[in-house]
Amino acid sequence: MNLAKFPRVRLAHLATPLELMPRLSEHLGGPEIWIKRDDCTGLSTGGNKTRKLEFLMAEAQAQGADMVMTQGATQSNHARQTAAAAAKLGMDCHILLEDRTGYNFDNYKYSGNVLLDHLHGATMEHRGPDLDMNAEMEAVADKFRAEGRNVYTIPGGGSNATGALGYVNCAFEMLNQFVTMGLNVDHIVHATGSAGTQAGLITGLKAMNANIPLLGIGVRAPKPKQEENVFSLAVKTAEKLGCPGVVAREDVVANTDYVGPGYGMPGEDTLEAIDIFAKTEAILLDPVYSAKGGAGLIDLIRKGHFKKGERIVFLHTGGAIGLTGYTHCFDVPK
Ligand SMILES: *Cc1c(COP(=O)(O)O)cnc(C)c1O
Image (cartoon, rainbow, N blue to C red; front, side):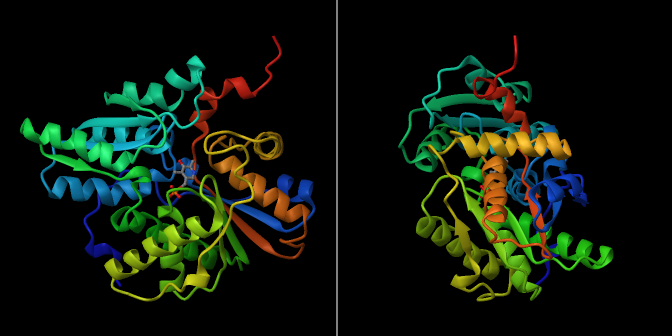
């Protein structure tokens, strides 16, 4: 298994910091909580998609693409990081945005990630909910191809075996930090959506025989479906890496109790997580992903699932720029 054999363009500021959160740990009164700062990957306000795009955009370049396409929800962090990567590499970018929430707030529709998509020069079109968005994207890509464009399409969230290599890389990076810093870590926790982050991490952890349990906190799908999505992508990622079979079905664990009202819609516990992280550690969580992960972390500590004497690493997957698309959720005094 040799990650260096895959084409890669450098887009992220790596290694991202691994930091103790002393005030959050004290506030919750349970385990020692550390944070892996993948919100600080650097590209256009950062986030987890940048690691995946290092491998995806290299593949696009190798295929001679002059245009990339992807799809996501209106406030997609993935779409924004793809638009930024394309701008940096001199490629055109076209995005399909799916209205999954029905929100009609101007900030939701035009601020946050959407504003950045526009600033990076991406063109956008919109779709209603409940369509097969990857199929919609391929249909549009074929129209561009008929006009002579060389289009590289990236699935939602950048989650295929190529993109997941970015999180195999993150697993190696974290294990190296644990050794260097002398940290014996009991659990790694993060938000899981399109599955590439968890699939890459579990493949990297198992390939290194690390034996650290990984918990994905779901943001959309029910548990059986989420775990199946992660597992099937981990199987493909392990094959691509040259270590087929390293991930067993039981290595893939998701908790989907913190989805709340639905994808992209924060619950009370989501907003509480944003509040606690912001006030104890000055860490900004986003309402769609990282704050649902944070809500799960907080609740599982309160319930005693994660205990005093243990050491947890919370992987911050980014997305805070999305807060400006969700001002309707916060009561700023007038
Ligand atoms: C996309 C995203 C996730 C989920 O990662 P997946 O690889 O899609 O499972 C988590 N947090 C943020 C901020 C994201 O943008």
